[in-house]
Amino acid sequence: MRTLFNLSACISVLLHGSAAFAQENSLTLPEQPNDNIELTLYSNPSLSDPAEVLAVFVGEVENCCENTLPIAGKYRVDENKVIFDPAFDFVKGQNYTISIREQGADKQDLQGFFIEPDQALTAPKVTQIYPSSVEIPENTLRFYVQFSAPMQPHVAIRFIKLVDENGTEDDAAFMSFKQELWSEDRTRLTLLMDPGRIKRGVAQNLALGPALLEGKRYSIVIHEGWPTANNGLSTQRYEKTFLVDKALRHLPSTNSWQIKAPKNQTRMPISITFDRQFDRHLLNKAINIFDVTGQAVAGDISVDEGETRWMFTPNQAWQTSSIRINVDAQLEDVAGNNFRELMDHAVTDKPHDIEQQTIVVELR
Image (tube, rainbow, N blue to C red; front, side):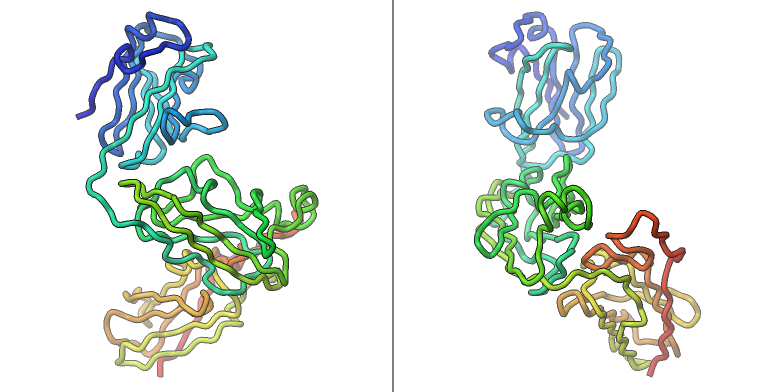
C-alpha cells in the first residue's frame, strides 16, 4: 500500500509563494516499481497540460532538474487528481525527484523518493560489449553493453565514452534518448551510434565527420562509479579497444554463408559461418530451424567467432532427413544492413519485397 504525503509536511519552503498550494495538496508516492504517482489538488483545475504541474526526474533532489529531461509516461486527470504512469517501472533503489508547480508558475517544489531494494547485490561488472570482435566496420550502427547485474538507468551518458587512439572523447558519437534502450531486466544497454555520423552526405556527417574512421583504433570506456539499480554498488572501470575496418555497404546474402550439416540420429549442432558480423541480439531470434514436416525444432543457440558463427544444438537427436533454415529478412549485420535494404541508402532506392530467406540442408 502506498503512503500519502501532505505537501505542507514534505516541503519546508514553498518556492512559488502560494500557501494554499502547500497546505491543501497531497502527493501519493509509489512503494512498488509498477505503482503510479498521484497529485491531489486542493481545487478542481482545468489543466491544458498535466506535465506542467507534475514531472518526474531520475536522481536526487540536490541535483535536479536543470538540463535534465523528465522520464516518459502517461498522464491522466481524474477530477482534482493528476495521475502519472511511468512508461517503464520505477527501479528499486533508484533515487527520483518529483517536480510540482502551479499551472503557469515558473518555480517548482521538489520531493524526492526511492523504492526500497529487495536485497543487496554483489558489485556489478561489465561482462561483454558487442560486437565482440577486435575489428569492426567503419559504419557499425550499435553496441550492446552487457552487465552482471541490473544497472541504474538514465545515467549512461555520464559513464560511457567513445575515445580515439589519442585519448580524445567524442561526446556526439552516441544517440541520446529520453528513455535509454535497456533490456527488461536492465542488464543489457543498447548504444546506438548517431546515424547522421554514418550516412554519407547528411549534415552531421559533413559537419563532424564519421565517428569511426577506417584504420583507426578506438575504445569504449565505461568509467567507474556506475551504480546498480538495486543497492548502489558501482562498477570498476572497463575498456574495450577495437580496430576499424572498411565499411559494410552491400546487402547480406545467404549465398555467402558456409553451412555445416549435422549427422542424423545425433545431437550434433548445425553451424553457419557468415561472411560478416551480424547483430548479436537479433541472432537470438532471427534464425529458426524446422524439420522435414515443417515443425519447429527446439534447441539452444550459441554465437561465437565475433558474431560470425551461429550454432544450433537440438534438444533431442535429429529425426529428419533434411532441415529448413528460415532467416528473417530483418536480420541486420552490425552496420544495420538487412536482406531488404542498406542502412545508408539513397531515398530513391526501393527495398526488396521479401519477408524471409529459406535454406534447405540435407542431413548427413
